[in-house]
Image (cartoon, rainbow, N blue to C red):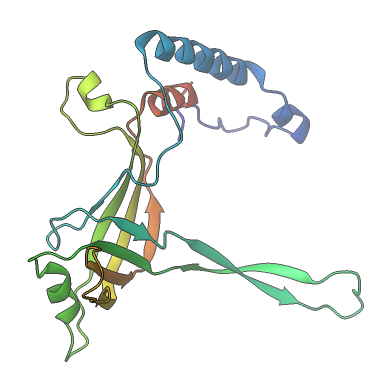
Length: 213
């Protein structure tokens, strides 16, 4: 949310006024142009985020890096309503939102963390629910080191997963003729996926500042 608030009694902008960028739009455009010049002068660059640069944090359950994370998906159901006498179209109403299960994969190790998590609630259905986070890294630079704050990589996105619990555990096939690493897979169900406003790239900071004007 920006710093500019709606003032009581102020007329709401019309569609025509909304199309006009106005002073705020001009300031944002000028700020982003200046920010781009500053980023170029400092040697900052931002390429599209690579799929391999991510980190999964499962607090209190797993201390390990995952090689694959899939299932970050949200779908809104659509309810179709047929109205009598209206033959040229069907009403499509927005329905409930569904979150896909998230699948985590990593090389099989001595750690029992994923297995033990799945085993909890096996007999009494009291599965252990946890919240965890997924971070998408930023390529090409290290914002924290630029600011002298540490060595963490820049952050493009930060997703928070709520009330997650495991619904499937498996390892890849064992084969004497294979030279591939054994992969441990855990599929988790959850009750919500939210995208944090937290980010840590030069351009994200510039965008935030410009959005506050």
